[in-house]
Image 1 (spheres, one colour):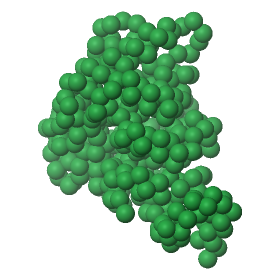
Image 2 (cartoon, rainbow, N blue to C red; image 1 turned 180 degrees about the vertical axis):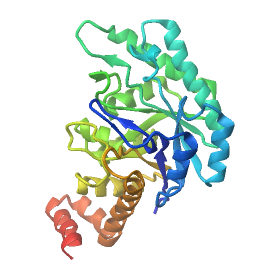
Image 3 (cartoon, rainbow, N blue to C red; image 1 turned 60 degrees about the vertical axis):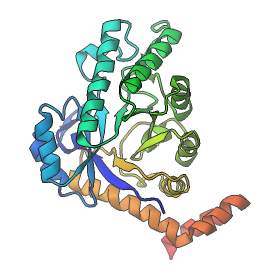
Image 4 (cartoon, helix red, strand yellow; image 1 turned 30 degrees about the horizontal axis):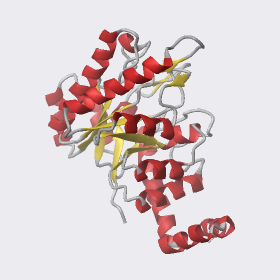
Length: 321
């Protein structure tokens, strides 16, 4: 069995906002780390640049104090006003240069913290209306930016996360296939994909299928887990809605030899954050226990024979006893 390490995105442990209200408590970085230390099973934190690095030395000391690793550095090239009309694909070359600089700075920080990866979801890169964007130029600018960042440090991976929409109505890398195409066109070994299960569900993908597509190209660099109703990126506890999809996904991660971080990308808007992220950890382990109870060889047999009724019977028997 592959070994996974469990991580949480630090930003979810403070104040959260949607379009209608604010939730949770405003916390400084030290208080967020204190909350993180109470989460069941936590081994690491995904830290966001620039927000979690006002003082890199302080962040390093907090990781050391709480005996946590930095799983990856998440590069935010959407929130700052300069990026509202795009980062890697902005019409202004100076803004594109700044987005790449964010990525390079994050790579230096990642290496300093002992991780070998940055992840970036370019959510402001895309379009909203017809005749708003020069699509060939935007695609080339994005590839050029990713390639420049990746060439900066061959010892740090650049993992691009896809999402169908939000805040842009159409994000430039909306699904696994498009993102894989970008990676293959950049054609650098340290460029790959962050797969978020909720984003895959929103895109109408089977999560196990998407993971398989990326892994077979050696481009499945990082996994974020959450759940939704396939109509919006609700960032719910994984397995709370799409139960069997999540079990199959966890089964395939092992089959594919994935042994990197599994990061909880869950938004605890109206429920306790420690309970939420502890539940995520237990959900991951529950899905793995379901797989082990049925038996991996038995699941492989069912897949070989292609009988979904056998699979459903086995899964339902786990619940009914």
